[in-house]
Image (cartoon, rainbow over all chains, first blue to last red; front, side, top):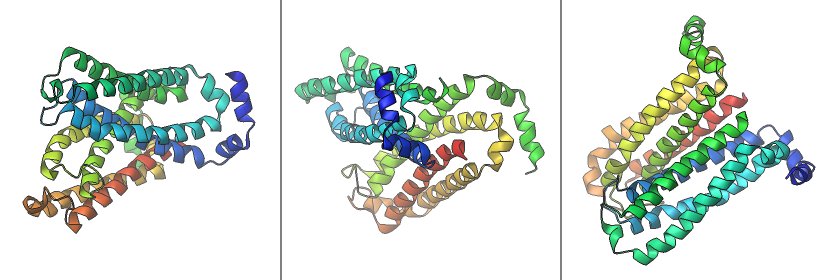
Length: 160
Length: 161
């Protein structure tokens, strides 16, 4: 990791990101906008999975509404994230909270991917009930907690 | 407002506690980020509907009724956490141009919402299910989007100015 970060730090992209003072705040702002989109989208879906919000819409319908936003915005988050890392690769990549955040992200995205497939198989059955089964509620809870943890870990990177 | 008011805030027990504790500020800041994300994210849903960009099949009134309670709860949380953060360095934040811009944009967003609710919404029964709302509603959505994205950017810039 230290070798990779040292190599990145020597690139001209890294120099660009570090020396142009408007780069980091701009890309961080876009990243925060992304947090707004992703967190709200996932909250809407997870609250439905938990049975907290009403059953007016089926889980499958809400997933179809909100998951594309999350997946598309992940690309933007990746791009803005890379630029932020480039501005100080050594500090970013070796930071334990950054590593925790990436781990949590990998796990929650995997859970989301797997759950989407399961949901597609069950669409039209239990996903219409306002009281989803235990496994669905568990996924909703774990997902929600993880997304919040990702945001908190992300904020703490600057302080550790 | 005189600088003595901000000095008073800053020297309060809350202000000094947050300023001096290394973990309290980032913890409150995290709450603020989550809260503001939910405020902007939820408002974005309504704005994108008004702009016919997303959620076109959803009835505007139903969507608002579903979403707005969350917006208000998140806003309350953002306000409380934001006030706590502000108090910790009140004099410096009060003079920070990015912070001042953020408050202006918040006020503009609020005014836009009031106008939309008092004026544009009056005709809502006729267009609530329409995929393309009338121009005044589209304008409200576009302005709202602009102001709230501006709030995010100005808020982030506070730490850099």
